[in-house]
Image (cartoon, rainbow, N blue to C red; front, side):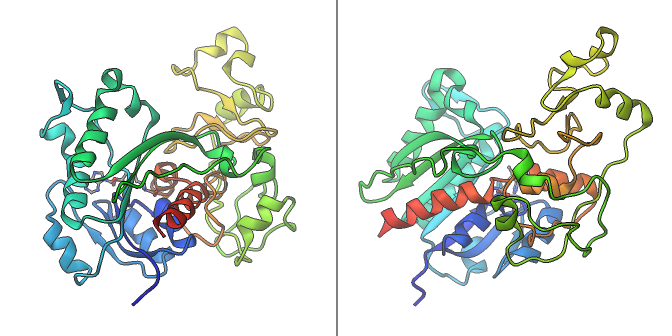
Length: 346
Ligand SMILES: C[S@@+](CC[C@H](N)C(=O)[O-])C[C@H]1O[C@@H](n2cnc3c(N)ncnc32)[C@H](O)[C@@H]1O
């Protein structure tokens, strides 16, 4: 029997969370998502790469069990997208808006894994003054899990990005999960992450233009000697002229007054700061620009800032790739959580 813990990943997307667990030595049995684009990327990059394209709100645990040929499930991981929770008293109710969260609870209830890891946006902890948070804790406590939660900052764990995520971990048998301490004291910067990638596109399978210029770049290039997904966006002239006025680390406030209102969101015309981790990589809304070039980051640059190794190749059109990347849990962060959990499961 395999010594590794078996995992299923719910709402797996392209598999950032899965990759972290895989790198920590877990055996991923199955990734489930309803977005086939992301699953194509998932299958292309994961060792076993078994996926199921299904709407989790309607998927029965029995069907999942069939898919994994009744193998033991040790850990369930996933980030159910939460469209806003509906609450009655102190409980999350069983209605349409909560159906994805409830699907996660249903799978844990059926498979009774040794542990689960549920990832979400940080404000899940404060909605309704903490009612959602308490309700999640109660739901899984009733199933026999000891639940802890914490907001983790990805840049504390070697990811060149100030992404915050709420992580709930539940363990059976009265064990309390201890969250890992930060693994780096000095965060990895944007420049350390992407300065080796050029201003212009590189055709898929092309050569790197230079050797790695930082330890982080060397780490990301491990096992990969060609560049993929570095297709740049050609903005119109006006966009290029406006962003050219914003310095490294600046934003719309650096623009002349008459240009400050050209985009109606406060994050508009923001340039990454080369000496800091990046802001949260989103799903491609084109407001965050490269610290040096007059364009938004390519899919490969975004993937680097999310700590996807260069060997992880994204498939789909540009919009789809950026969405897959922006949706993901940074694999390095996932790996640190997975490693801590593995030690504590023993
Ligand atoms: C935040 S992303 C997950 C990212 C993933 N954990 C990673 O690390 O790459 C959420 C995913 O939920 C999927 N999703 C949304 N509604 C779903 C449903 N009803 N059934 C299955 N998957 C769904 C989306 O397609 C999306 O890929």
